[in-house]
Image (cartoon, rainbow, N blue to C red; front, top):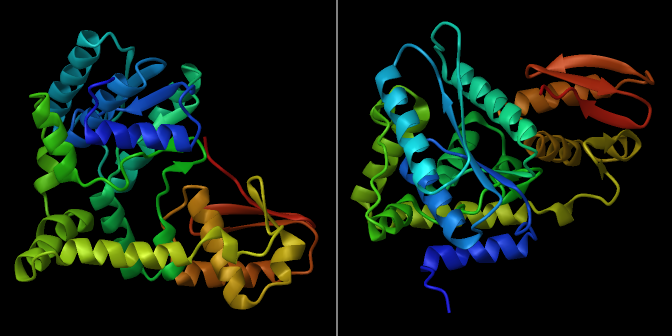
Length: 310
């Protein structure tokens, strides 16, 4: 009989359900509450074939915090005999959220490939999922954007999507583990932070339980946008069947494009982008390339693909 906590049983269930117990996992480890809980739980439940990577955004901004967080992560991994990796941005300060995100993704991909990992574990939780869905609705992506993050999406594994940050904090408290607190999370300038620290908190203060109710409502709407609603044969491995796509209604085409882009990890698109892609695809040429939403679309007679940056 093991001594697992409820959160660990839920993690075990996700590992079993998605048949990834034997996979080698690289954990994106920042030292914050979310990723510390993820690494701790994986080490207790899965025990082996687990490595961790800290991505240091380099000079500028909260550099002293980043140095402290990197040391914290390294020390934790040493204490738990877990292989640790770090990548630091070598150039001038990264300024925008997009630059930070792009470097983080590139660094994690590099370590993922070098270590021969099979899954990249990310500590996104229920609160993150709600914020992402709200951001997409505000940007006008429509109901198809509610699908958002999934537990298993290509090599990305997010087992905490049904668990709140409060539950993660309580889990760490049980082990008397204190996480690092990124001071930039309190900055209201990034829109996501404002939604988290101002709008949602004000909503909950005004009506107790409203945030959970909103999350449940969006979950129900997301479930209605299931894969079963898409015609059979429209999706291949990393491509859309062009003949199938052209046979769909305009509304179906937009939903297919949105799902395809989300599955590729391409999130910064709007309804206008989808309509522009449709317009470009209404073309009798057998092969051509175009760019929409910062993405190169590669088209031939049978397939619609995007050029993915490694």
